[in-house]
Length: 467
Image (tube, rainbow, N blue to C red; front, side, top):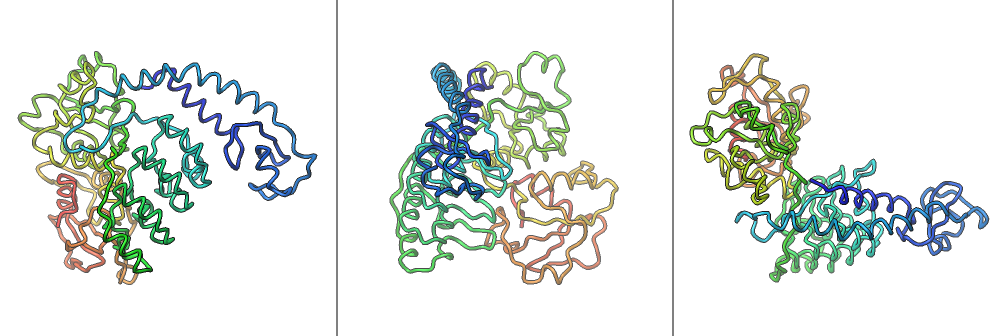
């Protein structure tokens, strides 16, 4: 949980960002124009009397020293200096205890600081990378922000650095442990982007830090498929040297816990954690689903709740984990306490989430041709709304009607979790039917397939698109 000092530091940095130069984010003295955009003296002199943000003309007399912002900046720096040492100490002592499971060797678990985003979902780090502000990038990285965070289009700061051709910003992010192959919009990785602009220096930098040359985008293409020159192909195929810098994986400051209804209320009242209700579970807002110790030995878990937890990448752990974690803060992910019946599945779903990969059903269009009655799957009754909720939380898109053949013909796309060599390769449209009353005509086209409601649950319980 963030300390009071850490919260102030986070807000201080955000406020400082709002008050700095709109172009270079310099914290030196700024001047404000009639359009209310602020710039440092150096950037102002380069503009030739036209605001670089809104293109509104101005005269030399229009630029007034922003005495208010400049004064606030001075005080913010003083506040930051007072609190930073205390905050760093608390953060280090709290998180150096966290146990790293063997499945995540080569990674570093880091406390995640939330930072506000603009209307595009961009953080100050995204914007600084777009504008090649190397100094600001280095400074904000050291303040503990999530360097792998995505904007609303799925782009990370590393994507922006690559598109902006900023080798220095990209290097700063990668040296700090940024994930090199996070799939953005259409599953395009930073390496895809570097290849698309034929930036050989950027390509080599990404490969040096472990970028995956075999990563597949939504159309099924790897970075090599994007190449326009033999030289670039050679770089991608022959690079073998890699740095062994630990990659950062970010965790919520404190577990967001949903307790199984069988757990004693007195037990929950004695523990100081962030408890979530069923509504939060259904919205994909939890990190841990806690079951009773008895259920781990003889599983009688609510299958719907279990499926909701798996599809959102939450750890499913016993109540013993909760008491042990609060004492030691050692095994945050709870890999040592996962219910044995679904251990591999749960680990895959958790790792998928913290590695910033797309959700299980991302890129898939679902049409539900099932009735509103209960559907018995694995001895549990699921309603149509339950099935839709699982597909939605899993990243799937729900269609209001069955896709027409003419609209999907020759539409070959590759959802992230569909194996390129499987029977589903190229298919992103699925019609879900009730297994007890299948339709007379079952599509099995490359572009469109009928699958049963049981298949949907089997996909979740294995955290894979089951062939």
